[in-house]
Every structure is written in structure tokens, then in C-alpha cells.
Image 1 (cartoon, helix red, strand yellow):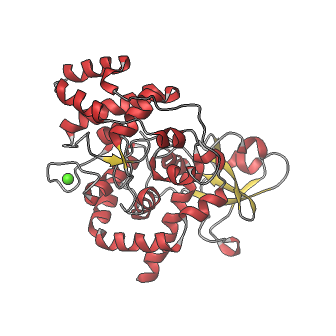
Image 2 (cartoon, helix red, strand yellow):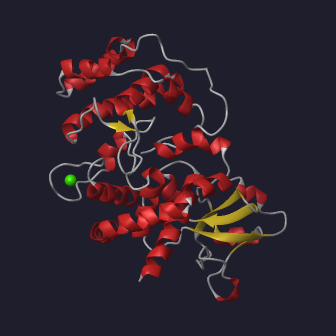
Image 3 (cartoon, helix red, strand yellow):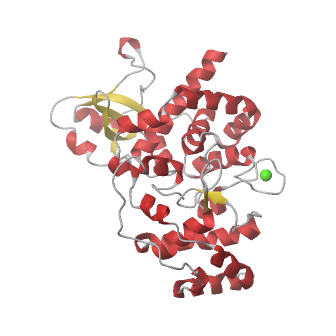
Length: 348
Ligand SMILES: [Ca+2]
């Protein structure tokens, strides 16, 4: 389970505007093992068989990072439009990196698709948006990120202390060194930027070498991203989203319902929303679908470079948002994946 502000992308977007918010600050000394809230966690971990001295040593090595508190206070979705996301995530250089990665790992990607039913292009879209194929996996120590947010960021402290506990558990479960492993400002790690509880729940040992390593092993990372989608009910063959035309005054309430599909395509049509058909002269790029009337959809309105874009999104779009709870994130992944698919087709 990831959250909307994890990963490199939010960090990348976070530093482009707005002055620093001083609402939450680091204390003069971190001393995390001495914090009252640390006691319960330490006791639970010791009860599960972890060594107390190790936990205290790692906690005391952690340092509160003011930059992490700044980043978390600026969710990307609130300060950026779809047009900004397009500029940041849909560049030719990222597609080129995708092609290299796709060639190197062609067999693994094919095996992941066969095993989990998740298209190669979507896996490539995720790893591309998250870390540019492992090039930017984050430079904060996970222990610094999760202690800073777990102890010195009250709005989400309990969530991040859960992640901190999971990080310690991963020392035993996945041979991770909790003291040294690095990741995003929110403690997301590896090619696919999994937070510790996602690591525990969805990471797989895809090359079968006995270790599940999402940081140094792209094969495990590819399998784990595919497994994440599979476990969140990705439906093989279901289109993700189509551009739509709107008329009349019936559609605005549908756009307010959010990105989780909650009404049928028939209802959308009644409200004046028509998806671009893939047949005949109506085709606009590849963002079209011809789905049955009872298909569940959501209506998205995105502020693009040429005004508002309307989209009809399916349950598979919603699955992408389970990776990061943002419609702009999901749309960036979708469009990057399409660009990659087209580039791969051109090569053949
Ligand atoms: Ca492995």
C-alpha cells in the first residue's frame, strides 16, 4: 500500500514552488530511541524476536531531516496541473531509457506479464515515473525519513511509525539493512519505490535466488510491480481510459465524483459524455475505447496545455491510483506507458 506523497516524483515536484512551511520543525536532538512513542514499537519488535540493542542502535543513528518535513507539507497534486505533469514525466529521454531497460529485461517483462496478467508497458510506465529505471531511487536514508515523519510530523505520525516498524521487520524478512538502505523522503525504496508495508505485502523473489531485493535486483522489482497490480485487481484486456467529448449541463456532477469508477458508461452517455470510439474517423490518438454500456467508469477533467481535457477512466485506471493516490500520477503512468509501447512497436 503506497500513499499519494511517496516516491521521488512528489519530491521532484515539491521543490519547484512555494516557500518553506515552518509548521513542523526538527527538535534540537533526535534521540529517537529515547522518545516515549518509541517504547511500544521497540517492545513489539522484541516480542517478535528482534534484538533490542540493534533496534536502539539504528534508531539512535537516525537524524531528523528538515527537508523531509518541507517535502511532506507540499503534496504535488495540490500545487501542479496535468500540464505540469506532462512536462515532467512525458519526455523523449524517459522513453529512450525505457527502451534500454525493456531490452535488457525483455524476458523478465514477458514472464511478469504471463504470470500476473499486467502488460509490460504498464510495468515500464511505473518504474519510469517512479525512478527513471532505477536511476533515482532516493538519497535519504529510509531510517531518517521514517523517524522524521514518524516522530516529528504529527499529522501522519502513526502511519509512518507503522512503516518504521515494518522497516525493522524487513531486516529479518528481506535481508535489508535498516540502518543504511536509502529511498525517497517518505521512505519508499527501490526501482518501484515500495514503502516498507508494501514491500512486506507485495514484493516477490522473481528470480528465485532466496532474497527479495527491490533495490539492487531489477528482476525482483519488475515481478513485484506486476504482483502489486495483480493483487489490486488489474483486469487483463480492460482499456484504462479514453478521451471523451462532453455536451450539455449534465456532466459536471459526474466529474465531481472523483476517479473511482462509480457509474456506468450508459449513465455517462445520458449525461452528455461520449468516449472517443476506436472505430472509423473518430479516432484521436490511441486513447479510445468501445466498451459495453454497463462498464463502470469515472469522468476526469484535467487542466491540460490546451484547456480542460475530459476522460472516461475504467477500473484499471483506478488500479494505477492504488500505487499512488493521484489521478495525475495515474494519467502520467498511462501516457508514458503508451509512448513506450509505440516506441517498441516502431522498433519491430
Ligand atoms: Ca531475488
